[in-house]
Length: 118
Image (cartoon, rainbow, N blue to C red; front, top):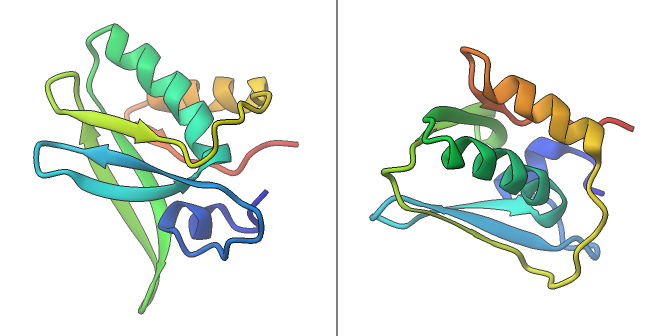
């Protein structure tokens, strides 16, 4: 598990056995790196919202040259989206994390990536 979720989301986590996947967004194919462990619950929550035809913001923080930066993208069923996992191994999902992320996804702030609860 990455020490810092923001580092993992930004692709800053060194590869100490952590698998890094990606979220590819829009017809312009923007790619954002996420640890597979972060991407798996996002997959569940995003799929549920997209299945309902709902649009929402996805927000996370990254370590930039000037310190922490916030990134937001608008997710909508009308915008192409692809998730790629580095590993083929499916690990058990943290249900508490999925519930927390789903709750955030339905808020006015949108889906804000939070640290995985213990």
